[in-house]
Length: 238
Image 1 (cartoon, rainbow, N blue to C red):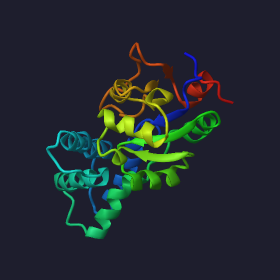
Image 2: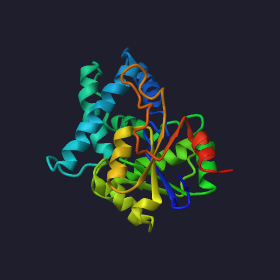
Image 3: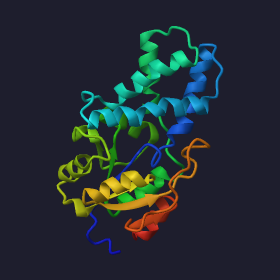
């Protein structure tokens, strides 16, 4: 398709831009050593992440008050620390460990690939992560965003249409002038339903052995790429 109508690219972050699973597993292993706990830390990362979708779904359904992702992560952390046999831990240390999600490393192509895409388009995050989390992660992972945007600014979590539409409004653009870039088909389906364009970028290593990644686009996706450099090539970026 022609890129002439696309003015901005907005990106899912967890799994699409950053390798959350390896980053959390590594930090959890270090945390476990400090407290004398041994475990399958990849499974710990998956178990921690398991509270994410359920917590957001309750907020979107009106079954729970608005909570930022940091709060959702912390509530889940308190549960799994007991399940994994951790001793009582000082509150300040728990607060700091919960910020492990602020310290996620990008995929190898993320910084350089985003820089190429930025040469032609406005680029911004569109994550369910809260603004503080995303801002800290941006610094940590050296991500060259033009804007750090979050579903927090819409008061609804993806894939609720308002999360996508509010992002376009904040950028001063029509939904059809914005393309969502994600490694998850359900996120892209939400974007299309809200009037945005969609590009699937595959991340085969995101889930390890716990879940199959999305590697095939749906028929109405606009672009399909193996990484950000492949997408930049297809979009005519330098």
